[in-house]
Length: 398
Image (cartoon, rainbow, N blue to C red; front, top):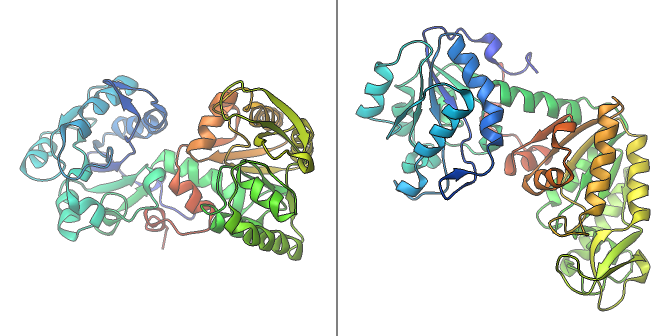
């Protein structure tokens, strides 16, 4: 990776003003950050720069404000970052203009400041040249450590790279190196798990993966549409009837490309969509008219685990069932545990990402046991779809 992208290994930061794009858009309720994963991930990059004598200037968005709004201020989140890295961070109530310029001018080597929410200015999302210049005035170098927003060509994710020497932070570097192992230079067999509710949101993803993987495992409610394409009934399960022909085309494409698609062979069904609803296991061709498929069954779990046991690389996006409700989390949890065990014994490289996927792996308690789990949602999906990410492309060594 370091031969392709400019990283901190290529940067002389001592005494320099470093504009660092981080993702501090963390869940925040009742004055408390409920999930500090993104802060914890980027903390080593922040402290490395400060320890090397940089003047570290943190940039981030928070929420989706339409102009300045106290409820979307980064002030409380900046305090959480300071608590995490155990160093003082001065908060500045704007990200451009006189106040920001004064705060930066007063910095000494090793100091860290956090500027206010970049999205308080319309120029951020528009990548407005004047706004980009206003940010660039504050720095000598730019570091992007926010893969999760690098699919957006915004001022603080893409625009700054055209005005300042630009580098990938350690978190972004780790993501890119993990992804390279999975899709660019994977050890084979390469297996992908794609779950979740809808095919419609993952058509590009399925198309790109079928060009690259050896086995594509389809789970979650989206599998129901494929099951119907096979001529089977799924009762009252969530299904996209208008995409049954599309599902059939995807299966035909897989066959033509000599790729294997794995679908459930049994299912856990219930008549109510609620936790601990009475449920039973049925073969996939024996789903009753009143049934809803809420998880894969034990035969399907065994089938997936068997495929993983002979794989070398796994990329995972999307759960197998309604993992938020017991007992319909069993399929996802058992497969996650099997993948984690194979990872720990050095037999499998495992990379997972996407909001629901991370939540499901947290339920299984295996996040720390995978090779890499990305906190990115949209950016992870777009990368899996094979789309160039603007915030990453500008960091390529020319």
